[in-house]
Length: 162
Image 1 (cartoon, rainbow, N blue to C red):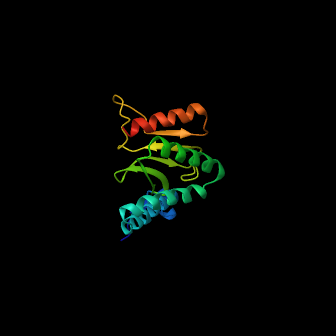
Image 2 (image 1 turned 90 degrees about the vertical axis):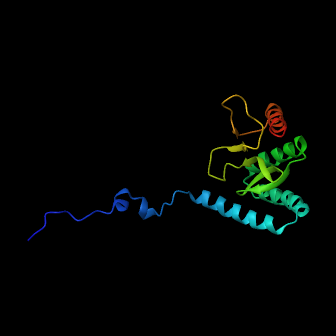
């Protein structure tokens, strides 16, 4: 007796995604998660006093290895945030320079190279006090710094940390 049924096809092969090993995250996202795991381990080993000093040096070291355009932006953003909100503690967060209050990230700088984006980003977490009505931005594209841009950043940081 001969069967007229077709053999079952493997749906993963048909879509082509299984052959590439796609697991839902890009290589950059996986790298950021690894960075975060390392940051958590390093943080657990440090005393609170040592954590702040280490955070500053960690952030400066991360900025130093950025591509030039991102490095210039990140250095200036770091200076602005440290001046406008000296009570925020610098730390690395998913491999990005970030600034925390009571250990919780309030804002961060994401270089364009981090996720192969066309611009750097100044972002804010839900710990930032930027709420305005029912809709407000939580990140800003940053392609350059002018006096007006710096004033906007200062105002955002001051509002975010009230």
